[in-house]
Length: 460
Image (cartoon, rainbow, N blue to C red):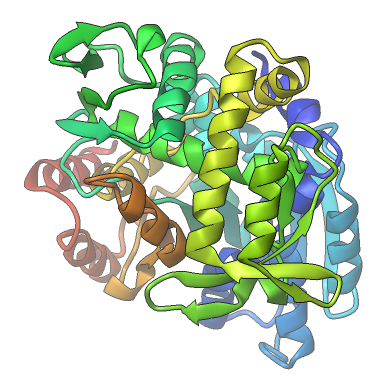
């Protein structure tokens, strides 16, 4: 699959960028605002790569309008892939133009230096690297992009990055065992994983990465998993991260499409109606959809445990999740049997998102990769991308999703986002390099630290 097909067609379907990829603006812009606080110039230049529906741009505009950084004249450049259009991004740029200056340019992340031209103060991106990895020549495309960033930043500039938290393990290749008992998860495993391993861009190709499925103590092919008994799976921990993330993504997609018979409010104030925010317990607001295959009994039971709220319904989040999994299980069964409507929805999701690799680096590997690859950038003055304070590395747990996962899997992986603010440190700045190395010690192994030390002191 070419990058052009991915960028211009699959990710620009009506509603994807403007709805599905247009949330969490505060979190996406959090480190960019922190970076602006550190910039010493009164006219900072900020670049956002891959803005999606513009939620980060809109949040930045709102913060500047509220008086944050009022002493600075911020210029924003938004870099989007060719052919990608978003109505909500256009609206967000209009909002930003009232508090600063901005422009929209097209190009790919790997070519950022050519697209942006002169060095800037801050570069920010969210969930960019897994797309570059999945659709931009794997690890080669990923490291090419990392090498581009120092050439775009001024010495001392910052790169603010947010993506899916990987796992707490030395390597994504560490083998673990997971049990799947819930019907919807077994059906999803049977339909999704063989296709992902066969067609997706992923690093699990070693002989030790073989995924082994057992039912009733017998090894079985994934395609032959039965619904009537639990599945015991042995695989690299990274594969289980992919299973979890893709299941959650499919669930969100089916919610938005209305295919399950109900559409929850996933954005806006009604999406944050917490019963107990700390423990991820929500009150879900939803509307009924026009789906006609949802059994009348399921709809009647859902309404029986819900309450009317103006023009829609509300229900306890735990109950809603149970209803969702029952409906999702029925959907997967129909899709697997070749039902035309369900198969079409399943295939559209698989084509657009089912082959992506979400988490491909642990924090240890990620930080080391940025530091090492940045020393290889083509530029006059060598620099190194590293966080310089412990507060520059942040993990934000997804309490709602973690609550759901704990109720469905015996040993789920933590669902979270990781945010890192990298500083572009000149190789001759020994004080800042020392701060960066001390910071890396908090997360990196001795082997990773040795690689970084060697890259900095040997010229890359």
